[in-house]
Image (cartoon, rainbow, N blue to C red; front, side):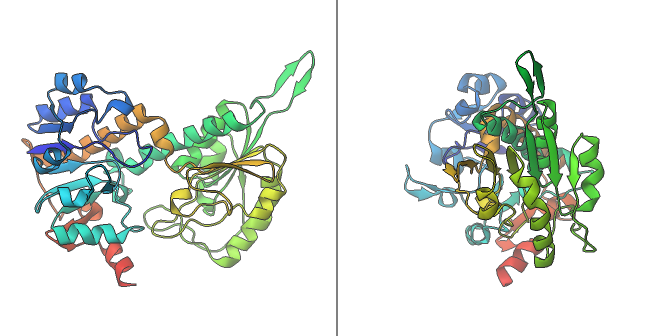
Length: 382
């Protein structure tokens, strides 16, 4: 079977689906790999490295798509302005696409693939189970996003993070508030602590308190009797009453912070507003807000997607693709997630589309011209 890796065309996307190292391993498993020329260049991987690993370099985007049994991408399908064609129209019936699709947010893309009879496995739908952990691309990318969120915020903050005792006096440590204690939030917590900051973390799930404290953070608790976690381990949509109580408690922590990092997402829904304009107005001069949820509406009421703006003397960072800012390691981790998925369900270079398998069933969006994922069907039937 032929695996093809096209160049990513989403603005500011520097990642690539497979690295030369992973290409070499999959070729040894019996796969042939075609990769578009310079597809890995922005992540630090050259055509020569791919050729040395055994991959075939192809100059034509159309040929990359048409030659494949399986297309491997990072981003969801886009309109290719250079070729004046949508990427779905470069594909042919019976092919398999494996990428991030975010079909709960963009269900129309699932319809396009079904109409084209292109099968789709979405990496953001990999079940959160022990067996699937090695394939969990959402977590691998969120880990890097959490790290980069702190580094980027620190770059805009006119202060250092750690306490420092000098002959000129004592410098107090920076105060960081993190909203959300998922993978990204915990990674941000660990990074900020290593840099010497005092870190407070808020999450609607009381069950994460122990994890926060084990990493040296202070947990901001909001008492509730609601069950705030779904069966997949993700945060559920909170009630209006809970969000009101949370904002009241969070207000004093946010307005006392040097940096606020928001990470809260609810699959298939607009990101909840956690930092209001009123909170920003009351923050300290030259403090920083980094909103990791701008792709899906944003957690800060006045953040702007993919822009850095200054409002009320506060810098608000709306970077929607933090993993792409560390493309070498982001590509490396994503490629290994794909490798684990492909090896898990393949034998002798042949991909076995076993819909009885819990991982394949949970992550498959489209099969044989039909939308088969129950969660996507529910979104479309609303």
